[in-house]
Structure formats: C-alpha cells, structure tokens
Length: 140
Image (cartoon, rainbow, N blue to C red; front, top):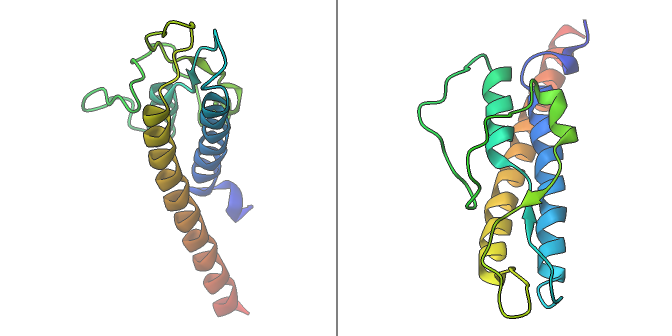
C-alpha cells in the first residue's frame, strides 16, 4: 500500500492544484484590467467545494458558501480527481464603458483569499509528510 495515495494527501494535492490554477486565472484578470472588452473569469469555487465534500464522504453541505462572488452550481465534479478539468467561467461583473468588467480591488481580494488557502494547504501537506517520516523513522 502506498501511504501517499491514502487519506488526506490526494485531497490536499488536488486543493493545491485548484488553488494554483485559480491564482493563474486571477492574475490573468489583473493583467487584462485595462484591455477593452476583456471579461473577468474565475474557477467555480462551489464545484471545488462540492468535490471536496464528496471525497470526504460529506455529500450534504450545511449551507451553500459563496466565495469571491461565485454563484452555486449544481454540476459539481464527481470526484477530487475531476478538479483538474475545471475550466474558468465568467465571473459576471458589470462591464464598464469599454466592455471590461475587471475590478482590481475585487481581484486583489480574491487573490488574498486564494493565497491564504494555498499557504494553509501547503502547511497541512507538510505536516502530513512529517508524520509519515516520523512513522518510518520509528520503524527503522
């Protein structure tokens, strides 16, 4: 049995991959804040949360949580492995006179939340690997 394929490690890896991809989408929005006609995008956070709940065996959410202004979507991925196939969706902002709907302040807030999430996941994953290392050293 491979200890890295069991438990929380694959879920945390998927969360890191999702967060990394979302960071790239947010950076693209910020980079195009002055591009006429550009429409901001985001990854479907609710679909990500639903897949994590499903992987953890908690199908029902206490209440729909909306992060970063993303609406709830019923077509959540079937598993955590499906998270790598999530595509950016329009964030639905109100376009300005030039057709651009990027609000730098909103994008900065999304980036701050996403960065905090990424940092938390890296710390949790590091602790999991530390526990595995300690278990191996005790046996040796």
